[in-house]
Each structure stands twice: as structure tokens, then as C-alpha cells.
Length: 56
Image (cartoon, rainbow, N blue to C red; front, top):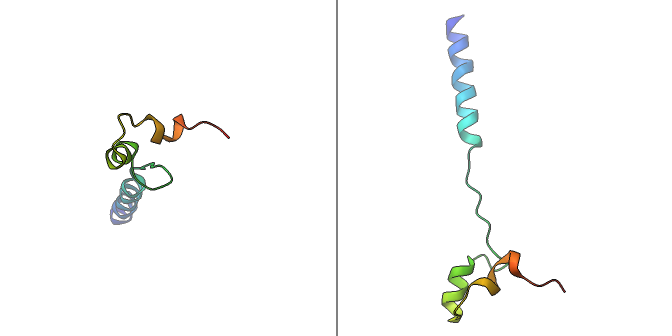
């Protein structure tokens, strides 16, 4: 019985650890706004940030 409880506990911990992941949100091109700024030579990354885009 103890072996079953240990096995279930291990499966539970592994499941919890597997569900932890980092999510990275990039713009449409797949690069962060700061990197897009560096590529284009702009002075501000604001134009490349998804939250700063003007709605059409």
C-alpha cells in the first residue's frame, strides 16, 4: 500500500513540474521589440511593441 501511495505521489509531483512552463510573447515577426529596434536602427522600441500598435 505504501508503494502505491509513493507512486501516486511521484506521478503527481511530475505532473505539477511538467505543467510549469514559461510563455514568451513576441510580435508578428517572432522577435522581441528591442531586437526589432536594433535591426532597424530606430531610437525607440515603442513602434514594435504589440500593445503600442495603432488600431486600423
